[in-house]
Image (cartoon, rainbow, N blue to C red; front, side):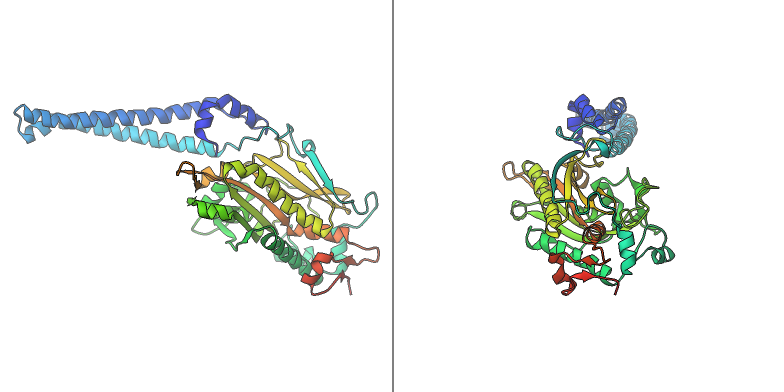
Length: 432
């Protein structure tokens, strides 16, 4: 959530920042709601002062010779009127605040100055490339053809079990999927200094609101048909970041670092992507990710984004997968993000780079929604944490990349060297 004080003081400037992402801030509505809330608060304060003055009048009347009962009776009507008006003013202030809160929840984060202008992914800016694309310019099979030829990728079985956009992996491919997950977790927890956490796959509405998934993107979520308002987590970012909700992190804990890594399945309805990537494992309703989350003081936020992105890049480099790093433009950046890098891995079967990780800096946007704070040692008071997260990596898409990049002309797939120990020594996948 944006800082409402900053929005009041710099309305036009923030509106211009939001316009970069194609969002038109309704300034008139904001000012109307804010004025309504202020009017309710002011009326309440004035009526409280009037009630206090009326109550003091009782003592004055007694001092002038009235009995206590006579004095109370004389101001009773006035107190009753004030109390009635006070109830109305408080209700007005409460209702106005609720409308203002709802309005604020629908405003996305303001992009940073360096975020380029643009409407969609075609306007994103390439920052760097790593590795040599395998089979560039060649006609090669994609992961669906490779996986089905190996006998370990079955979309028809998944459709019978559940429906479209699911897959059943078996044999060597299932093991490779697990090996990728274990390798990523070990790399991030062992070398990069993240604390591994195991979190619920079902989250409540407050958690989704905290990270910015609700109320804006409810159509993209799977809601459970139960008494309580529960959802399947769309990404581990939601439960992991909410570990800090309603918390004030003390200096000792902050000094150790708030870095978390978690492996979870993710569930998305893909409501806005009908007709896109319907073939294979690129865009599914259920997929696995190894997610990285950091929370830091404001002055460390941008450096933490660069560091976390580098940790995701390290996975691709260890696997020998060519990729490029792009800076997302205003029209392609996520709702809660101030700045986002996408890592796009080279897929020979598509002869294209495709997103495999999205690493974002949120500033204090999520922290304000979650009430996630740290103890500022300079002031002794709580301040907002700044949050960063990214995929390190999306496991299914990494499996796709390995299959397509390590495919051999005889139909086999080589196992990247770093994964062989996780595969029990198996270094080649074949149909036999």
